[in-house]
Every structure is written in C-alpha cells, then in structure tokens.
Amino acid sequence: MKTIDTLSTVYASLTRHPIRALLATLGIILGIAAVVAMLAISEGGKQGIMDQIRAQGIDNIIVRSVKPATEKRDGGATSAYMPETYGITVMDVDHIKNTFNNVKAIVPVREMKFDVYDGQIKTDVAVLATTPELFSLIHCRFTDSRGKSLPAPNSNILLPQCVLGADAAEKLFKHQDPLGRTVTINNTPFTVMGVIESVGQGRIGGMYNINNTAYVPFDMATALWGDRTDTKRMGSEAVAYGFLYLHVRDLDELPDTVRRLKTYLSTTHASVDYELQVPFELLKTAERTQRIFTIVMTSIAAIALLVGGIGIMNIMLANIYERTREIGIRRALGAKRRDILTQFLSESIVLTFTGGVLGVLLGIVTAYAVEWIARANGETSITVVITLSSLTVSLAVAVTTGLTFGTYPAWKAANLDPLIALRHE
Image (tube, rainbow, N blue to C red; front, side, top):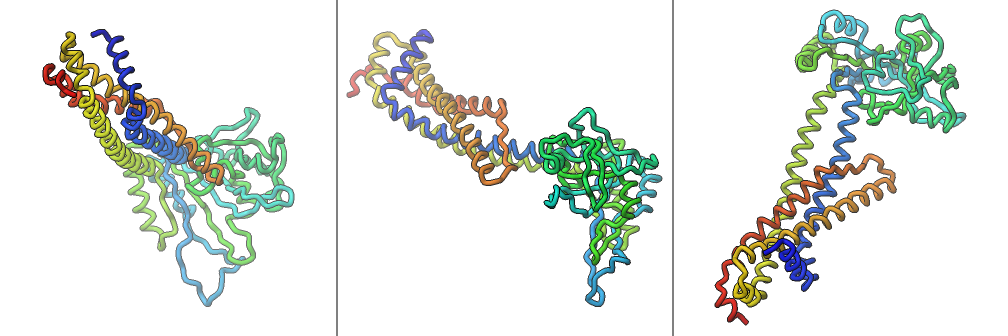
C-alpha cells in the first residue's frame, strides 16, 4: 500500500468523527501544553538567577561586613562621636594580600548611606565607594564609548567624579546625556564620568542593584567622609569595608581558598561580623535545584502523557470494534496484515502529533499570558524563555506516545480473522 494511499485513508478515517478525534488528543494537548508552559517559565527564571549569579563573577569570593547582634548598654545608642566599628579590617586585607597566593586581586567596596536626589525628590539610588577594578570583576560594560572609569587608587586624583549605573542615570537625568553632568551626594557635587550596565541585572554582594547605583572613588570617599558609612547624628558606624571582592587565580583551588579564609576570619574575629558569599557555589546549587525541578517536571509530563496515551489506546480499540467489518472487507480485497497495521498505527501517530502541535501552541500562549499578567501586576521577575530543544522534545515525545500506545490496537486490527470480521454486524 502506497504512502499517499495510507495517508488518504487515515485522513478520511479521522475526519469521519472529528469530535472523537479531538477528545482522543485532549490528554496529549493538555499534557504537552503544561510541560511547554512550565519549562518556558522555569527556563526564564533559571536564566535570570544564573545571570545574577554570574554577574557577581564565579571566580570571585565576596566577603561582607555584617553588624553583629549585640546588646545595648545602659539602654543607650552609640554616639556619633564614637562610631561603632565592626566587619572586615585593614589588617584582614593585608593578611589576605600577603598570604593567600590564589587571590589575584582585592577590590574594596564601602557602603555610603547617603541619599541621592533628583532635584528635590529623593531616589532609591545607592552609593558605593570602590575602585575601577570592580567593573571588570562584575562583568559590566560602559554604555557609551566616551565614558571613563573611576581613577585608580593612589593616583592622587581627588576630583569628585563618579560612575552611574544605567538605571540610576535614567532616573537622575531622564533622556538627557548624563556624561559631564553633576550628581550631588551628601552636599558634594560629583561629575559623571561614565555609565555602566549589567545585562543580567546583577547585584553587588547580592544586595545592591548594579544598574541602580552611583560609584565614587574609594580614596575620594575616605578623604571626604573618612570611614564612616552613616552620618546620622545618632547610631553612626565606622566600617572600613562593606564588601571585599577577592578575585581568585585558579577556580579549581577556590574551595580550599574559601576554607582557609573561613578559618582565618573565625580565628581573628571575636564575633561573627562577616559573611562569605561564593558565587561559584551558588551557581552549582542553582544548577542542582534546576536539575531537581526538571526531574519533577519530567515526572509530571510522564503522568500526563501516560493518561493521554491511555486515551488514545481506548479510542483506537473502539475504532477497531466499530470498523471490524471494514477491516474484513479490506482483507478480502487483498490488503495485507502489514497494510492494516500501518494504517492504524499511522492514525495513532497522526492523532498524537496533531495533539502535540496544538499542545505546543497552547503552552506558548499560556506561558506568555502568565508573563503578561505578572508584568501587569508589577512583577517583572517572571520572564519566558522558549527554547527550540524543548519544543522539539515535546513533539518527539508526543509522536513516541502515539507509537507506543497505538501499537497494540494496530496489531490487534492486523490480526483479525477476515472471515470472522466479514460476519461482524
């Protein structure tokens, strides 16, 4: 039997009862749609998390100063003239620089708790004091070729200059060119030298949005404000380094470097006034979580497709019962068992493939609908990423389901006795 004849027969058979065919594929449609939608949303979430982690640099160790939990003395607060000190010290930096051979570079970051204003309106732009090496460690790019980085440490350049994140520049200057303009930080005007952008919307130490921050030279901040990070009249704090970015030479030795660093800090600090963040470990954890999520999604998909496959088998068995006489007539006219087997197996595959295509389309529409509803409600973290591999695998699984669950009905139809089939009413 020729292929064109088989396809023609399959088409005629399926269109004879279109509602039945649709109901037969409904399980496949919903199963594939659910899988495509969930994978698209989870892939978008995964890429967003991975981008944020990579933006911190997987070959970095981030040491953060943390205010220890201490009891108040005499019910009072720390005086502005006697600021509370804690966290990473200059001695720590010197020790790491001199004894940790795997640490290639140390980049300091100090949190400056100053408000940045757009005219008379206070913005949520953060202020960090750092060195120009930070931008390469967190994988940022300058949005304009005219942009310049911060002056290098110990360069004796104490001009008030700053670099803005892309979002901060847009908030402060709208659609105007920010380069060469000034930003007032704690009553000091800083000239904007450049604008940086992090494509992955990364965060400094997992806290400060790279794109929504103003960066000032570390030496300049120390010269202007000392090491105080809070200028409030009460509760002033003096923290030498809010963060340290330690750039390692060999990623294979990173775990050993982290262990040595933890041992040193636990020995030299009386209280736990520090925190270690290792983007490489966070990345591995995120990948493991994603693998678990993928296994769960695969299990759900398998159950959904199992139900859909059983539905296909039931419909095909019912078709054989209704078309027993037709099968007998075709066998009497010379059709071989192979022809009957091919016909019914083709019907099953066409049903599941059609259900797979409809399921993929419904899954894509559902995923983008979820994203649109989330964004309409102000939730911008949900993004949809649809990969060609997920669509291909979905269709392949649908066809495999048709082949698997259609084999027994097709075999049963092909092995009907022609004489018994002809007598069937």
